[in-house]
Image (tube, rainbow, N blue to C red; front, side, top):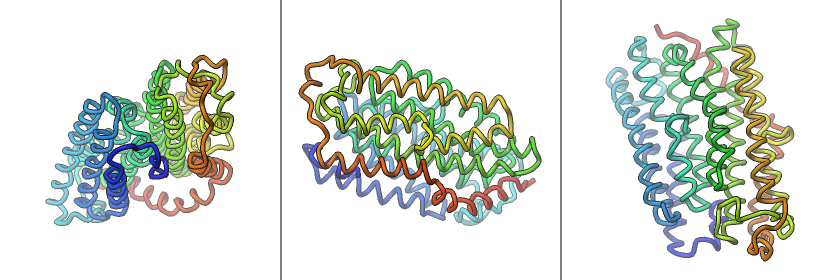
Length: 406
């Protein structure tokens, strides 16, 4: 999709642009396929390089600032993770992730290793307060870069928590779950409010990404609260599965929204909300897509955005009413900033002479947006194919997480 999205849009160094995405794709497959910790780390870090080049060469006017900030944040977070991996290698004698799972670690070791992993993955997710690189990176990245960044790169942080932090340091994660849950709730509520005041469309979607990813980490860590509160894991699997569904769904929705902004930007060369208005009059087909993805972003039932949030909120009730209550505010805030964006950009009077001359989406753009629209609606109406695949893995993870190593 990213290749088709950049088809006529990228004007110079086209071969290098495509090559950067090809390398990026290979490294991403490596991250998710690696069963060896050092291989995982190499792929995890190497992904910075093509992304750095994509933003740095084909990005916007402030691209140098954005790339450096993106690179330094992610790199510094990962250094601590590398130290933790080397320490565990000394203990286990191998870099196999499964050997790390079996390591008998004391509580102090677990806490330190958990913090090391958390620093590495929290920057990637990104969690509040280490999220500030993301809006800058999104605003300056070309459309294809934004789509990959939102749809895949952020998910690696969530995957890292599931693959490393939870099973390797279950006791530390259980003791420090309040910290992650607090950070997740701050992301959901505070970042939702920050999104409300944005004037730049890409920044607004970037902040909404941070709020939605707060749901993912909340779903993963609410497990401990449920286990403490009820003594059973009955609702815990729902939280973890909700977080996973939210990751997949957010990849479709935010990728689609960035593509929509890209469609407008290619025509008007502005991302400012005030430069638009009344787009529905000149681009009705595009407006239908944008409204659909906006509704999915707000978590409308029947779209994929609803499923993950609903499962996480439902499982949060088993741990604490207040956590669930705060998490549910995202439904109000999400609707507020998304509807505000759609009202200002799509509906209303035509406020700009450029908008009056806009041409509707061409065949290439319709193909890309239609594929994503089908994915969003299908996952929203029939999530079973995705959740049924997860059941066994989630149950296995929960056995690891609740088995103390002390």
